Amino acid sequence: MQIHEIAPDVYRISLYVPEINLQFNHFLIMDNQPMLYHAGMKNMFPALREAVSKLINPSALRWIGFSHFEVDECGALNEWLQIAPNALPVCSEVGALVNMGDYSIRPAHAMAQGDTITTGKHKFRFIRTPHLPHGWDAGVLFEETNKTLFCSDILHQNGDVKPITDSDILSLHKSSLLEFENGPLMGYTPYTKRTGKIIQSLVDLNPKTLATMHGSSFNGNCKQTLMDLDAVLREVWEA
Ligand SMILES: [Fe+2]
Ligand SMILES: [Fe+2]
Figure 1 (cartoon, rainbow, N blue to C red):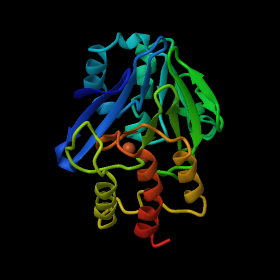
Figure 2 (tube, rainbow, N blue to C red):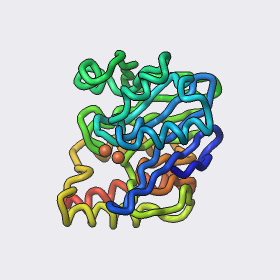
Figure 3 (cartoon, rainbow, N blue to C red):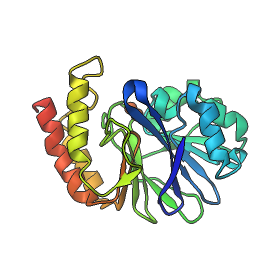
Figure 4 (tube, helix red, strand yellow):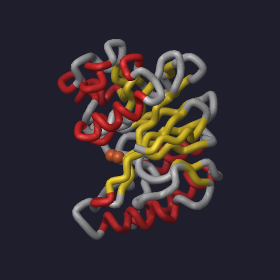
């Protein structure tokens, strides 16, 4: 696990899996109420717990956030809830209703469009993004203090890349999507009638940093990159 601070108090904890040429990034936000964004997979839990321990006592975690129901997002959720007695899952209302009621050992903190959580210095706003990157329950968290967007699989890049960059990540995102299109992972991020509007809602946030789950975080021109993402997704999907 590689640890890098990609924005103030935001630590990217990354594991590269060479067999699938992919990084899995988890973000620890250090604050009075620490948050881990992406619980990670069960089989990564021991290594991720050890990495988190280098930064905080894992039992102090208060929030375990994620975008949508998938093992890299929340597979090890209950492992975290077991070692952190005050922690609660944070996800969309759909995620809480449809999945967490059965999956999680404690009820989730369900967030509606625009809801906020303050963890101390940092304030997080929830934005609903159904089916972007995928999943009915998908959403993202925007940290308003330093304008960091925790964007999950949006702008996913394959490869063992730098922790953070200000150079073009969109081209690599496009080639990663096209690589997936040629194999069993085709159809990763659909383009629906609502996708353009949802992307625009992320553009309007004017983020300073994009904390991506797979690949480099980005601190270049986030607004332009998100605006251009619309055309890339349309092209890949021939929408
Ligand atoms: Fe995903
Ligand atoms: Fe993912």
